[in-house]
Image (cartoon, rainbow, N blue to C red):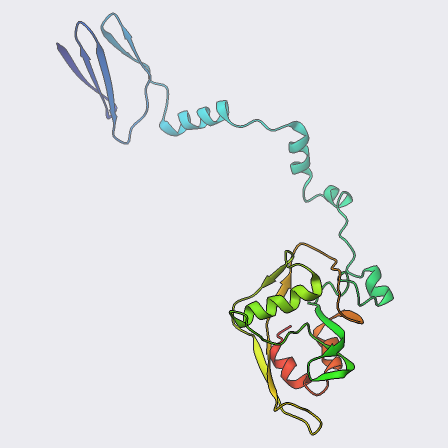
Length: 232
């Protein structure tokens, strides 16, 4: 085996040759890169430039090619041309103009809450505005009871999401003179609408989707507590 060592501009080239194979190893130490050719057991070193120059040429040769249409769009950004193709949707919808409180396509900058009009626990003879509700019976948890209450109104829960397992608040309802019970507790759970703009509301005489400010007008006696419990 013949071994030759060369040092060329801080580049160490080790060439090892025997009868069956040849091994070439280049060790770089903060140096330039040099293509190497083997010609008749001789080492020929071509000085082509620095590593940064080689890297730049490599990127230019194999960089991703984009369509001219795409480049024309990117070059025109900031010049006002793109504004012609984009028109934002109006914030005031037809439901806002007609004050349609049965539509979810209203008050887009606020959260909407579902209220039902009909018979409710605590006032069985007179229809009142109330949240979807159900008397706790034998459900495994309070959340299961809340899910059952909402499902009885919507029919299914595939477009709803319950935020947490614990109630977001509760109220203690004191008994009245004409009440047959000794009072009860009302627990509130938060559920969000997902991926839909329309529900088939049932088991009530009427329903509305209202903002927080509008909701407080339906419950003047509990307005102070509801205002603190509902953030927005």
